Image 1 (tube, rainbow, N blue to C red):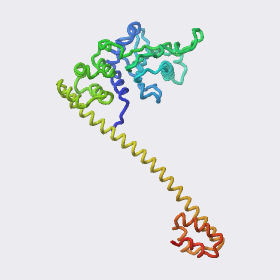
Image 2 (tube, rainbow, N blue to C red; image 1 turned 90 degrees about the vertical axis):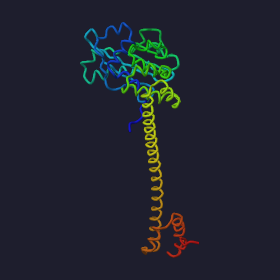
Image 3 (cartoon, helix red, strand yellow; image 1 turned 120 degrees about the vertical axis):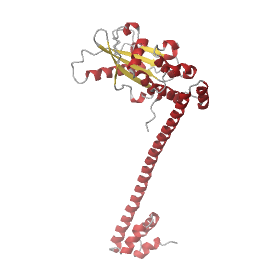
Image 4 (tube, rainbow, N blue to C red; image 1 turned 180 degrees about the vertical axis):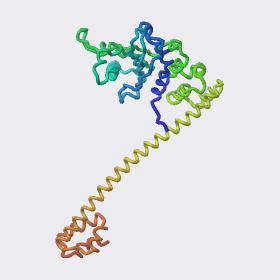
Length: 336
């Protein structure tokens, strides 16, 4: 059973991992001065991410390699901010991600260090709160002297999905449907989304799965809405997705329970082992002291020591120094 991944990351990658949709995204959302320099070829998706592990639940990224009309290449780095409120540290994080991209590009040699390709940083935000993050690192540095403000990245291009008109989200219908879903307005534009995403496609399923996982939706009401709108295929797909998510959630809960049980069992086993070791150590001490006082121990005495409970061993240890003989020591071992 596949693990439940971050729903924002899953949908974001599904939207832009398709070269055709990625090309339309760049044409729609890059400034004309930059979009006009892009060649007609669709961008290539570069595998791997650069987001810090601690931020992976709130950020997603995608790196594209694009051909320029000049005959050279550039990178477009798209960072999606999934928090409901913007993170003021984002320009600093973005700069570190860009440096990582250049380091990976340069590799271990020096030949590429003087020909680093441009990186066009694009931030996509769909949170509910207004964007209040500084436009660049320059705005975060406490100096008005430009000679002191050395920057690894001058700024970024912000696309605030929440602040845009629906028609401005994209000319690509599928891409627009995905962005509407990220804005958590899919239920209000259900007919448009259903018509934009062909039946049987992965993106159609991923959009519906996002709604079921992220939206605070009444499942029965949604089924009724789909049925009333004639979206029978979506209603059936909804049941399949809901069942799968339930199975995945149960599997994850079971795995976590087993892990906790294993850790608890290990701790309990360790504690029992330590306790048993202490008892055995005291039994050996009792045997040595008895041998020093009374000579080699008979087999039945050795067996009684090995089978004795901890409190009985303690009683015998207290008696061994003053007892006149073995029988007097083990008189402490008789039940009252």
